[in-house]
Image (tube, rainbow, N blue to C red; front, side):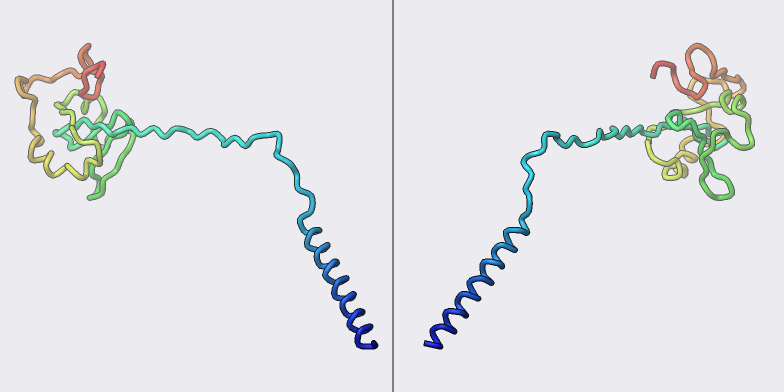
Length: 150
């Protein structure tokens, strides 16, 4: 009987430990809150606006003007720079010189070699007289070789 009693005591102890163990596990769950009254709303995302570069080229000075960036691009010391004003020529003189709208929308550096061949330094638009200065600030142009409204 002593085995039975010890087996009984051991069984009771094991059962008690099992109950404590289960109580511990259920205690880990803790308090579960119901659904929240508020709803998560993601912050607004700012739209990304991509503007394509557009260039007007001034062959007499090898200068490009981007109206979307309001910057002049040209080579300086072998490197391409982009600045709010051209170097070595006033804006008025530049605007009075012949210009041509470019049809590319990336860096002028990618196209400059072809542009120099196509529009040499002494290039003038067809139908204009080389000795006649063209006023680019008249009613038809906006001052950067571009037709107004376009």
